[in-house]
View 1 (cartoon, rainbow, N blue to C red):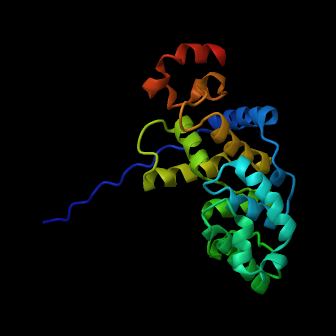
View 2: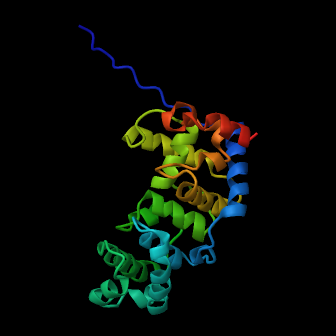
View 3: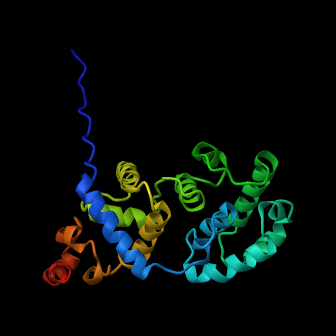
Amino acid sequence: MPAKHTPKKKLLPLPAPPDRRRFRQRLLTWYRRHGRDLPWRKTNDPYHILVSEIMLQQTQVDRVLPKYAEWLEKYPSLEALAPAPEKEGAQTWYPLGYNIRPRRLQTIAREAVSRYGGRVPSEEETLLSFKGIGAYMAGAIRSFAFHERAAILDTNVARVLFRVFVGKGDRKSHAMTRHLWRVSETLVPSRQVFDFNQALMDFGAMVCVARDPKCLVCPMAKSCRAFPFNPEYETRRTKVLRHVK
């Protein structure tokens, strides 16, 4: 008997060019008005950006702000951090929690000093070779420190892209995550990469939040694919569409 062929699942469509342009324009306009004033947005130092990204993992911005300044005062460079005692680093990190993070940061510092002259490299493949740097962080370092065209996808960004461009399905499945990475890569502009990726994160943290998203002030509401299908939003739909016209 001939072998049965399982039909391949069709890939979800990527945003069309007009939708990409509209999303970028609305997001950047919103960011210019509402983006947060954060110290790691005022530097191109890859080490400083690396510190901020590791501190922000599963930790709110307001808890990170004082610790970020304290850490950089004590360890202003990779060369300063690499030889420091681990116990000292953990004490400086306290009370952010997830104490594997300062050890991970110090491991990266030691490797950067021993193999890359005390610098954080910009090449994606090299960044991914560091233990503790995954796809999101590599994209963040490349776009924020080196202003390279690189996509990011963390929890906030995935939620925004899923709601606006997909709307239905299992957002946390592996297949959906792969699709959302493709969406993110498609949306990254050639210029203003820094602002665009920072805007994505702010938008997910401030407007398109996990619970009770602020649809009444959302510039994406009119074209958001999750909006029409979510019963929680249905009673607000007429108001929102009138608001964003």
